[in-house]
Length: 551
Image (cartoon, rainbow, N blue to C red; front, side, top):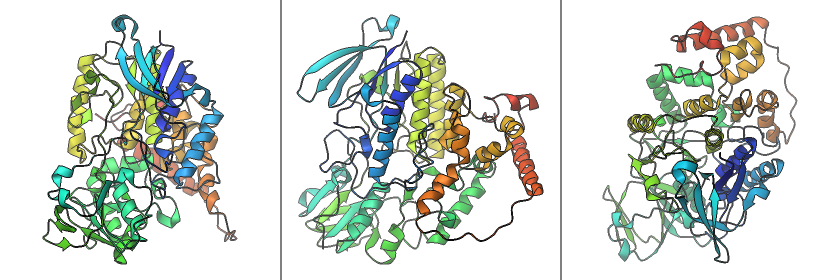
């Protein structure tokens, strides 16, 4: 029987996994190579080899309510889109509230994870670790949760850039970037327009003579600030929005792209990509259009070659006297401590059932948590993966046969590659709410909307038409939290609170009539019934069946 669990990494995925173990009565031991929690969100003055790194100006793309731990709402006074220091503060509060720190061994690196000789009978693992003094120890665990993320191994494809060896200036990967110190008055080329590339180009442009942002494929650029000044990811991210998008996907995509081009014409700005909006994670950047229109950042096509201090681009243009090149070219994912047999790929992704379990293990006692990507915060995804994995470890849930899992992985990979622009740098992307719901159904915590409409209409409207915040997955089932209802009903108060730094009297408004509320109820129920018209009425009262994807 599984009791002792090794958790590798004390970032967001690791912390939620430690808590998931404790919630299931397991005994977690978390190994963290650094001296503190935080993972990616622990800022380091000097990058540390083998660990994720961020730059000084990083602000989280997801708003606090969307990236919240499902049973620990963020303090109301924290800003909606937090600076990395505030994200780390929130993580500390979470770790303290649930007494996670005593279960973490800091400055302890996992060197290897291997099956014990009697694995077929016990499912146990030998975990070899090394402390800061170089001392190695071997531990035996009943199960392992891998929570090391995928931003630790920079991808620097110098071979793709002819003449780079002749470049007279300085070049480095975005992993090494801390701030713009030393770049005052320089001419800088940033290669790559992911979120890091966009952020760094903007950051450097405040002090540099000129910044050239080179992109091979372009990108859709969105702001953190949505309609009415609210966090953008709270708008259009409800379950009802998901249903409408499923029913009218092409139209919704066209309307969204039209709206983005109304803010600024992506073609005019040289940013328009070939892919549709939902095919790849967009660049979240509030300042890039302003830096482009002011001439501080100039968008360029792919780099063709380097020659001395000059950079030639695919369109034939040449920029002379370049001082610095920043390669924002992504990361290679790597799990060097795992057996090679557990790192098989299917397409670009790891061969993992639901992106969590290796299907070939005779006993499902190892899971990968947080190696996932979707149009939304990773925290809820990782947390749900950890909750599911720990229940599988305990034997409360069983996985399908290896053959069934392999077939589902193959099918899922084909679908993913058809829908999303996957690559070596972006190996995984999932539909956010459907993926969360699929795991929630496994755990037994998927919300039943029609049951809520009958039992608690006020809550049901928030769950259906409000942003799909993580608290929804604590309303019922294993891990149910008594505060989930209140967290959902008060989430907008926590959104508004940080803005209340200068009070302005509200104008008088008339309250909504009962008839308006009835219309909303009827419309919501009708849409649900249309969308799930293949389900018999009796299935509406099953907590797990209502939001099952239609066949």
